[in-house]
Length: 154
Image (cartoon, rainbow, N blue to C red):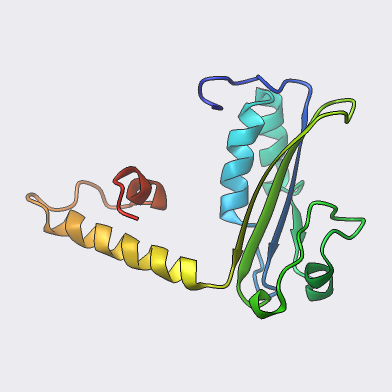
């Protein structure tokens, strides 16, 4: 959508909240990638704003009390994290809010636990093994999960 309709949400504001286990020190790479794409729907200036200062505008939640409570005033976009997922989760909310606040589009993805990551890692290793074993060997030195997805290898 961002590729075909850049600027289609001109005048909107992008708000992002991401919650991960308290031991995660950095901002989510997934949140950064999705932020870049969604900001394209607003404007080139919005993309520059999102990327400025290493994505400081992304609200990072690492406090377990806030994660258990969900939706405190400072982070109204946060869902409650199940207690058994506090040591391994990824809860993200992306909002596009109109200038007057009367319209809001949200996209959320919540992963509770680490099983999904283990399964994805297994699929990625299988994909890489096939690339290496292919006639002529691997065609590139660096692959990403996007390569795995594009190949339908999940």
